[in-house]
Length: 68
Image (cartoon, rainbow, N blue to C red):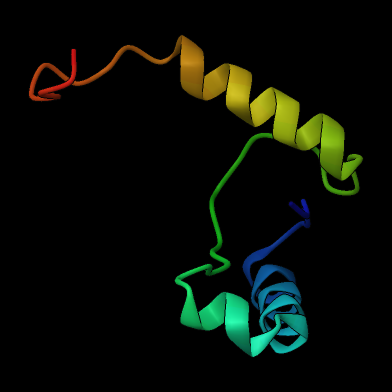
């Protein structure tokens, strides 16, 4: 995970990550994507991952979720 400020910076970071990805990972379905966030740019990746995961777990599941 990388937190950057602005769409252009995000797209540039995404391109760099995708170019560094091994072809085998890409073939297996691993992809990078951009996501809007309220996290501050430059936050440590492990901390950003933990905060994002906690936020996802705190968000109520949709009523259409068949697994709930």
